[in-house]
Image (cartoon, rainbow over all chains, first blue to last red; front, top):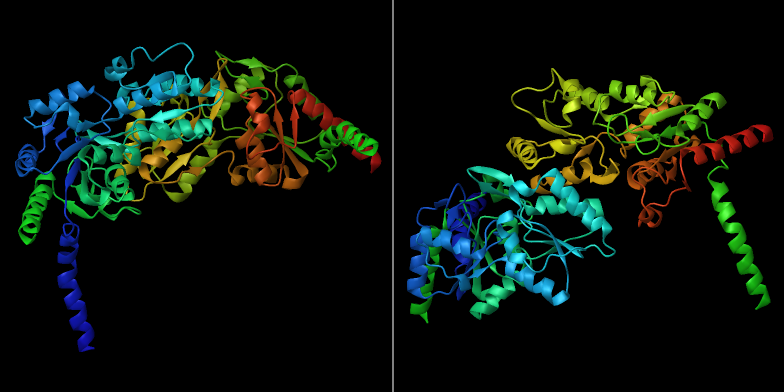
Amino acid sequence: MMTQVVIVCFLTLTLPVMAVNSWLAEPIKGLLLDITGVLYESGEGFGTAIPGSVEAVKRLRETGIPVRFVTNETCATRAELIKKLHHHSFSVSEGDVFSPVPAVISLLKERGLVPHLLVHPAIECEFSGLVAGNPTCVVMGDADEAFSFANMNVAFRALKAMEDPKLFALGFGKYYKHKGQLQLDVGAFATALEFACDIKSEIVGKPSPLFFDAALSDIGITAKEAVMIGDDIVSDVGGAQKCGIRGVLVRTGKYTRSCENHPTVTPHFIANNLSEAVDLIIEAQSKNIHQV
Amino acid sequence: MMTQVVIVCFLTLTLPVMAVNSWLAEPIKGLLLDITGVLYESGEGFGTAIPGSVEAVKRLRETGIPVRFVTNETCATRAELIKKLHHHSFSVSEGDVFSPVPAVISLLKERGLVPHLLVHPAIECEFSGLVAGNPTCVVMGDADEAFSFANMNVAFRALKAMEDPKLFALGFGKYYKHKGQLQLDVGAFATALEFACDIKSEIVGKPSPLFFDAALSDIGITAKEAVMIGDDIVSDVGGAQKCGIRGVLVRTGKYTRSCENHPTVTPHFIANNLSEAVDLIIEAQSKNIHQV
């Protein structure tokens, strides 16, 4: 009886510490960071930088750990996004950002597809020259207010008119935080069209493995050498983990307490914010270097 | 070789006739009819009666075959629906109509649930006295234009705020025909909320077996003695067949040619319209009576 009590106490005291450290044991040769909800909270104008995130990115640059930004942001062009990040003094260049719009444009050109767009009006200009009379696919991003009943029906009828209907979803998030409130993301509306048309969408963006792979190969590292940090338990953490990348969840952005008991995804670590996660990574890396 | 040709010709000539007749072999003691797309096409004002449908219902009344109308219509109160049917001279009384609104109201009262409504403005009045400050469930019907981005988000946040989120869908149709065009139905938008909240909705209406059973028990017949006639291959035909009711599809309403090759549902018969199906049923019944 006494032995059992001692074992229980031992496990209780040591397991959380082991859990905290185990994800840092293997070397980290590159970081993938989500943008909205990790670097800044979206809102009116440029939104608000999350406390400590600007300095965290700066520390990563100083230590030389390669960083890429993998975002499903489709409410602004990549140039506008960079402008927003620079406004908050984030050290990010356009070449460091992986977002679904350039990826889907390459894909449309490769396959010779004509898109019907159900996207945010701010990014429609990026597709100029690709849109024509008889669409052969629907491309949907986070259209925000443009997810009206009328626009959903136009996209639905476009799919029903296609001989071989194709739906590209720029990301597949369930929801995100906007102006302090949760709101439905592209994944919810894509699911509605999938159901109505008996089709499956092709995801361009997180959690598609192709998307994570593109960022990893740009750094020149393997999945095992990388850590993904995001506020979306499914798209960021679960998506990365499916590729063999360690997934860290932050308690900022769209995070809610229920994410900590998600039925299918258990993050490698849950940090209060990007700053805390980066501090732990830099500390662990410096120890690893000294050990080597 | 000659024998093979003869067999092929024999099969070609006789199989369609066998297929036409087999669903009529067993006695039919009651009919369940869908309303929109079978009796009339929806549109501005009262819509348009489908040619032959008024007379078909009249013939059924004359022969004494019991009829109930099972509809997922949630864009009008039951009284307004009857008014519309009477405008077209359909012989239908309120007691013959099974629709989801009275069913869900009974259910809310039984379980002591407080609904947040995402329904057509025309039927909100039916829920008076049930809506209060802190909803414990979301009830969604075919909200039509009220399926706005803002309303979808309010319903989503209501579900996210519930300890035990419950979603009642008044039917689960994919789409229907309105003013000559296909438009998304409640099932598509319910699927979006299911995905965003990781929940399954409880369907009140077709294709829920409880809904078909209520109409059968009102007539006092078993599933095997009934035929359901509808324009929705999944909710009407597939739903009825899952309960053991014969399912007949009509080529009116939301019917499109692709319904004839549906991946999971094969109707017992496909009629050009209600009139044709009713003629076949009355003819077969009169033969059955003479044989007895």
